[in-house]
Length: 274
Image (cartoon, rainbow, N blue to C red; front, side, top):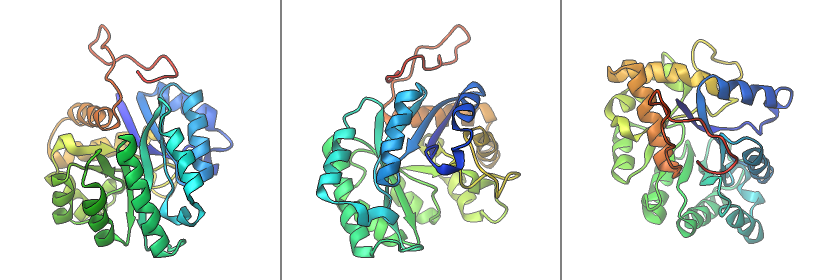
């Protein structure tokens, strides 16, 4: 059973075949997907997707690129969504100094407010950080400190910073980048991190693994990520798959379903939490 802990199926890249694709990836062994909001529009679309697909859950939050769109009224709307049974995280939130689409002080303001929202609602956080490693870490340590759990999405920092995040209780998000030839540091982080602290993700439609690099990504391609994790950690593919599935279920607070006759967890069958 495969868990895609971070996807963006609300993205326009899926407009032509979203329904067919989601049904096909689910049938291929991807048992759970968390669709992650980035903009206010994306948050609304994410909630709609959770209502349509029983195997799809949602995270609600505003990406730093769209931080300028937030105000207290809109944050209150997000707070209300956090009470929905299939909303399992606040995200994706954080800092992005690469694009700088919102002023940095505005990014910090709403990053802090959304971290506080996570603590108030008891939901884990999904953290975005690009070219802002120190400020992201310092704010997390000061404001959240792993209080409700969370994941450092698409981890791109050093092994030393990974250690500090792990010590605060965060998970490390690993996606297609781990298959790239130039991903030496990430591979060192995967080797170092305990298996029970790694989540698999696609960030689809972005960051397809080798041999699909540059093409539209989808949840079935986590298979290549799992192969890479298994090779780096010198474990079986099944061990990597089972552990990362259990990790995501635990972090997102989704009860692990009863097992079937073959010992495998049963597939979701209703629109609510399992």
